[in-house]
Amino acid sequence: MLNVGVIGCGGMGKDHIKRLTNKIQGANVVAVSDVFEEGAKEAAALAGGAKVYTDGKDLINDPDVEAVFIVSPGFAHTDSLLQAIEAGKRVFCEKPLATTAEDCKKIVDAESASGKHLIQLGFMRRYDKGYVQVKEALQSGEYGEPLILHCTHRNPEVGTNYNTPMAVHDTAIHEIDTLHWLVDDEYESAQVIMPKVTKYSHSELKDPQIMLLRTKKGICIDVEVFVNCKFGYDINCEVVCEDGAIKMAEPSYPSIRKNASVSTTIDTDCFVRFEDAYDTEVQNWVDCAEEGIINGPTAWDGYLAAVTADALVKAQESGQIEPIVTAEKPEFYK
Ligand code: ISE
Image (cartoon, rainbow, N blue to C red; front, side, top):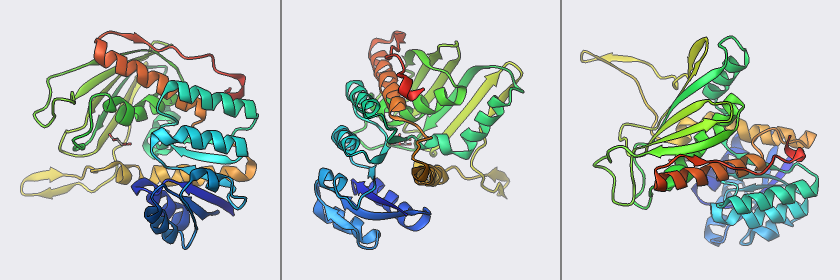
């Protein structure tokens, strides 16, 4: 049994606590922490009475906590990650790794200096069955080399505080991680094209956006990010290859005939759309603890995502093609 301490007891934190407690095999939530004590107490009850902390550092240093699950807001990740590395404890950290590329680099350096692979990052799409099927098809070699990726990332709507850079940091960040993993390549440059703005947006948000990424091997990727599309949470990905085109399967719902039309369901949020992916990634993290390995997205992937996101945000402002320049991948992550 892996004894886990969870830092951050907001909506997502509680969701993960329920998952770890009720669904995942081989894990036990023994401690929770949140700066808001009431939230931590509610979360502790979900875990059947875990210890309550208001300081994440105390949770990390609790000898009963074998592994740490970080679900606090992104700006608080760096401190907790560095403390966990110092304590030599395994970590699952929800995305983002940190809010700046500089902090991500600090974390990567600290983890490599510790000599132990400790951090898995919560980019859950790598565990989604649809993406896994596309990756397996690509790896089969039957369709030749991938040339172009057409993707959409649509949300029905977003809160009024959601602004233009968040289309990169909160939304396209998933494609940034998943797509380079899918085609096993690295990004070279970024560009953003701004179409006419939907009437459902506001002055601080350009919506929709078309984000273009080019990889080092020359693969061109277009991602339509449209966060007020109104009709659903709609994620699509098609890979055009030399000998065929592979389109990711849509979630399976019945096709219903009624009133002279045929309809099917589209999910409305990411928690339903990627529920299985969340379960699989967390189970995988727990299973790998026994062997002491990390086989999901690493801190290095978090650093790459942060550098790519910075280039896309720069491109949103400049309208130009922006280079994506990363540090050399350390031996430790190869
Ligand atoms: C949210 O944080 C997510 O992770 C969702 O997958 C994404 O679709 C949404 O735009 C983000 O705000």
